[in-house]
Each structure stands twice: as structure tokens, then as C-alpha cells.
Image (cartoon, rainbow, N blue to C red):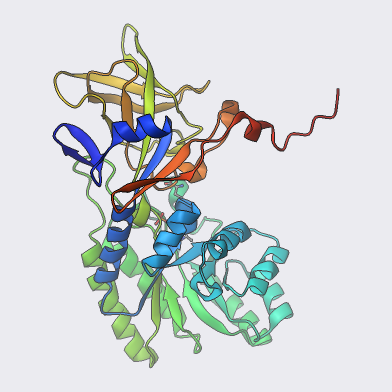
Length: 410
Ligand code: LLP
């Protein structure tokens, strides 16, 4: 989004016009930004055999998946439905990594039948896998590296007390199962968390993977998960992707020399690829002053963007209907019957009833975490590509709210 001649635009299209055309609330995605983020990552890891497995859960519209496929990525899927969505969008089975957690073995079998790579994150499941498939189906193992890192406790998933991955202290247990069933372990995986800033955390994860990898002679790839930190606030320090690329690639090459074979290096970024490309456009319904605050009440809330409430996440907000003149401090709140503060104490150009606000960083974990709470409809989604706007998801209707309810005739 750029401010040109006092108008916020994406690829030359004014956001006020997008809001007028599609109504609010509406999620808007900048396809060019998504493509350039992919390119950046590809450049940062140009010296190694990089495979990007986009974390589908961040934003799973099939058009976004198709755009990513055209940019040369694969996907990481965390449910069988995401696997199916990826295939529906045109990904080949071999481009899909399935990283489930606490699913039934039957779901893993479904994924095997679809031909995707399975990433197993607990020993009992590895045993089931061994019993069923022996060495006939390749498998990846998700390790828990015991690293505490990430933006907040809820998104730090690589520490010793996390439910994810198999503890590196249980490597012996893994090796026992691998030997017993002659498992064909072609990949090892770690994902430390989300919003990770320092190259050192990725390097630490890499060292742990390298140590473990020496025990597995059939590897084809090492997967470092996702988690690159993007900017949310003006002046935020973000992951220096070039630096991470340089340092991790160098360590990876050294490892491969010792291992005796060139492996692929996989990453599964979600936020890095789509966070900054997305905006949630909302309309101000009411400006309400209290003795202590001025609230802007908008036609959206935690049902559409839960991150501020769930993680105390900061999302930048701008008034796209009024971009000059006086500024005031406002607290932007939703219309949900909860204290759904979207942004507290923000300086915005004077907000009037009917003004359109753009909430930033809404590309990742925005729509994909949206719900129908308060029986509200989920918003439309619009993709801007090559200077044109496309509706990629229709706004829900009241019929959608009733669709699966069964009236038993009371
Ligand atoms: N790989 C695995 C195995 C993951 O669990 C995740 C995220 C990713 C990759 C992508 O992480 P990213 O690059 O997007 O940070 N809803 C939270 C984030 C939850 C992330 C869950 N796993 C949020 O809105 O901050």
C-alpha cells in the first residue's frame, strides 16, 4: 500500500474505491507483494537447493495458493483438508508436506494415499507408520529442538514443554523404531516458532538438525520450518532475510560436505510471504467519546481478525478516507459483544462516520482464523494482481449461517 497524491493505493487502485466496490469488511491482498516476498527468499538462499513450502494455514484461499504455485513454491499443510485444498489448487503431491499434530492415524493414512510427504511428530505415530508401511513410504520426522523463541508464549512451539515434535532427547527412541521397521527417513524437520528475529535462532535449530541428521543416511532434505519476523509497527526490527540466508546456507553447505551428499533445504514461511500483503478494510460506524477515550467502532471485530485479542498483536491502522489535516488519538474497536479492541490509542487523521480504515498485516492468520461469532458473516476477499482487482471469495450471506443447522421442528 502506498500513499500517492493523498490516496492509499495498491498497484494504482485506490483502497476507498475497492471498499466502495466490494463493501466492507473486506480483506484485500497485494499479489505483487506476495510474489516479491517469495523472490526475496529465493535470492537469500540462492546458493543452496531451496524448496519453499508455504504454510497454507496463514492464508489458504485457492487463488493465493495458485499464485504461489506459479511463483515456484510448494506448500506445508497441517490438516488433510489443507492437503486437499493444495491439490485442488494444482500442487502435485510431491510439492506438499503434511505436518499434522495430534491427528488420528487414519488421517495420516489418507495423506499417504494422496502421495504427500508425511512429517511425523510423535513416537507412537512413528510406530504405527512403521507397522503399516515399513520401508515402502518415505517419511520425515519433526524434532523438538528445545529452543525457546518466538513473538509470544502462544506461538513459541520449539521449547521442551511444547506439544510439537519429538524431543531431541528421545532420538534413541526414534532410532529404535526406525531400525525396527527399516523406515526410510528422507527428511528431518524443526519449527521453533513464529516472529523469530535473530539469524542465531535459525542457526541453533540448524545445528540441532545437523547433529541428528548424521544418524540418518537416507536424507534428501532438512526442513527448518517457518517463523521469519515481519514488521508490524513502524520501526520494528524484522528478520534480516539476507543475513539468515547467508549464514544458514553457509552452515548447510558445510554440513552437506560432511554428510557426503547435497541435500535440499526446506523452509515453511507463512507470515513472511503473506502478512504484509494483506489489509482488512473496515468502515467506521460510530465515533464515541467517553471521559477518557475516543472509540472508533467499526463493522468488524475479533470474528474477522482475532490476532489483537489472542496474542495482543499490534496491527497498524490508517484512515484511508482522510489522509491529511488534524490527527487525534483513537481506540479502534469492533462490533462484537466482547471487548474486541483492534488497536488502542492510535494517532489517526480525523475519523468521521463512514470513513474506511485499513488494518495492516492482515494477510497472515487474518481470514484463515476468522469465525462466525455473534452470527456475523465472514468478509469477502479481493486479490489485486497486475493492476486489476479480483473477488476471490464472496462475502457470506445469512444462508451460510443457517446452512448446516438442522431444524428438528421444535
Ligand atoms: N511451519 C510450521 C510447522 C508451523 O507450525 C508454522 C506456524 C509455520 C511453519 C509458519 O510460521 P510463520 O512463518 O507464519 O510464522 N496464528 C499465529 C501464528 C501461529 C503459527 C502456527 N504455526 C499468529 O497469528 O501469530
